[in-house]
Length: 467
Image 1: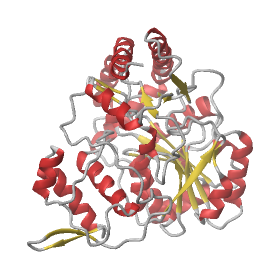
Image 2: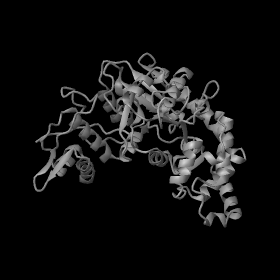
Image 3: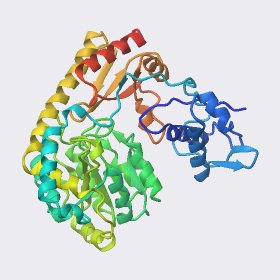
Image 4: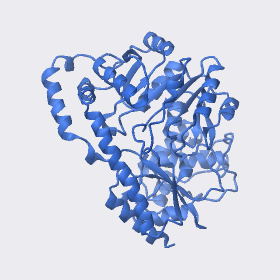
């Protein structure tokens, strides 16, 4: 009976990680067509996960046509074409972590930030004011694009922080960037291919795929997304993070931005989705101008969120549509109701209008800058500065950490996990095959770890790796 092993990592549900791993094994050819997989109970026992977890992974694989469920017989691999860039069948097996995942003391996930910095007292006071002054409005349906007060506050914020000049009518508020991204596929149409940076934010690929769009991974060089490879992909829409690439931290220079805008101008219905997810947190120099500010043809859709600057649980994001798309949106999609409660929208509008947002960003930017410095100090104190090097940390709440060692990335990850430190390998962010020549590299999100946590976590890493 076939035995599977995989490395649980990331904040995604375990069933989704298992599904992705088995799908990769099928696409690479390591699981051959017709091969029988372990039963749900057998795999559950082998991996120390619940039967429900295995059942969820198997069900998704069956639904997508990777597996066939035969009554009273089991699950079998269906024939599929190998994915371009997938690992060859002779690629080494990943480390076997079939034992239960050890408890995590320190998690370097990139999601979220420092909850203790949220201005609870100010937010509560403004909430009470909204309840007393907007009692009738709170019971009425909000405008589908968001309440006018919030859209006006967003426009002022964009001009102040990003130099973007737009009208409130171009702003659409929604419950998270994921919802707005899916809405954009409906607006733009699924045909023609949607390009993504590779490596990049994997959930965007899943949103495009679930929306019926063809996903086209495009590699990066030191200046960001490679426009010639984008042209070769045949994609009609591209999603980019030019001001601080996730997760590499690359800042796209103006020359490459001009190339990207020229690409959009040269084809019918070509559009660029600019995801400006953490632009408020730049620690040196002036903020990088947004790609939208260079657009003269109405080809850039600007997307941003308050998840990083305030709190992910607020679920408030927004996009700025160019005039031509705004007309189409109002004609075809304005029937969607607003997905963010009016209460939160009015409260956030007051928070921004009265300058609380500006002060909050200034405070948290200083706090995160101190934590970035604390991480560098912890590396020096533990004698890891010759082994661990950082890059991509000029802005945002994560850095890349390269580890110069002869040990495998899987072993380093496992040793760290045994000490209670959860690390996130860069390889996991690639849609196609990651480069094999690169040293072990980790995406280190530090937003949720204070200075004492950072010191202790690197002390544990030094002990775990014993360099």
